[in-house]
Length: 281
Image 1 (cartoon, rainbow, N blue to C red):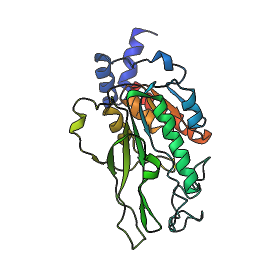
Image 2 (cartoon, helix red, strand yellow; image 1 turned 90 degrees about the vertical axis):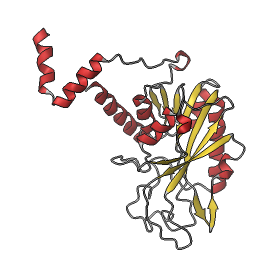
Image 3 (tube, rainbow, N blue to C red; image 1 turned 60 degrees about the vertical axis):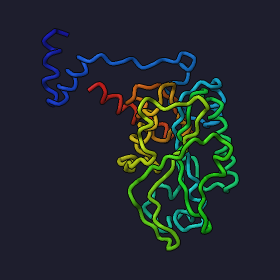
Image 4 (cartoon, rainbow, N blue to C red; image 1 turned 120 degrees about the horizontal axis):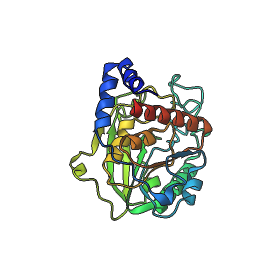
């Protein structure tokens, strides 16, 4: 290619793209850290069971885990999504459950599964690592279900409130829920990144938009969790549509994704590749 050809190409692009290229060319981008012991796992979506993947990882090898498991929302005492026909939520994405998970396990079985997942996460977490475990409280049989049966016995250091936009509440017995929770489950040596402790514990972040996954969470939420930590590989055992990986890419951090559904694996890879292309524009 001639020297002139390389000069002509940027001029054809929109002005703001040209400016971004010039700025990025002038800035020295820091290289992404490389954890050689995890080379076989990082930068990939592993389409398999989460616990099996974590059992294959070396102990105390992961710095941060950011994840949001299925909420088992179709096993509910309310009318919402329980009967599979949609009930009062005909447009809800989870009417049919997930691609490979119906989201309607018996409660005791669901709790046992999630505790096994957390046990596997604790095993692979470094002594200075932390888990950001996003879940949702709900009212069942007229009483608050706060997920304490899942996290009891694990080193929960704090609960962060993710304040979302309001929704619809058909139950006259309680107020409209407008938040989810993030359990910060931390190993003894975990410390936040410098100045991150100045953030409050209520994060007001809108729900994800333009995402075909039935239960996505916003990139900004995962990004805020990751940016509050110092280092280490990021793991998401329930990667879904790739949100945690995209947040890690934005912050120049290594990541490992696990997702059982081949449909969501393809969705995640597509979103990650599209994001990576924007970094080259």
